[in-house]
Length: 90
Image 1 (cartoon, rainbow, N blue to C red):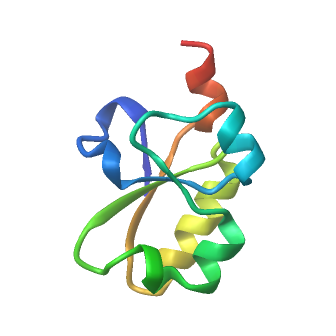
Image 2: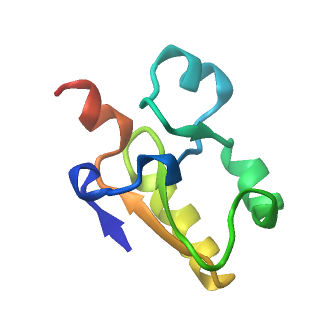
């Protein structure tokens, strides 16, 4: 359920669940911004049940809880360990 950022093969399946303001300040090229509340309210609008998706937040904690909910709904999601904060330092 958790993955290292370096192991993600398709960066276009990376969903940043932080706020739009946080996303605008710093984001990963190719990622899309869908704030957590929007993603959990209408996951079918952003995800499909055939593909794997990677969820990222600031530290990896919120994305992990979001991933657990989405997986329980039948989606294939993985939380990025350490989140954006761990990538800023690289």
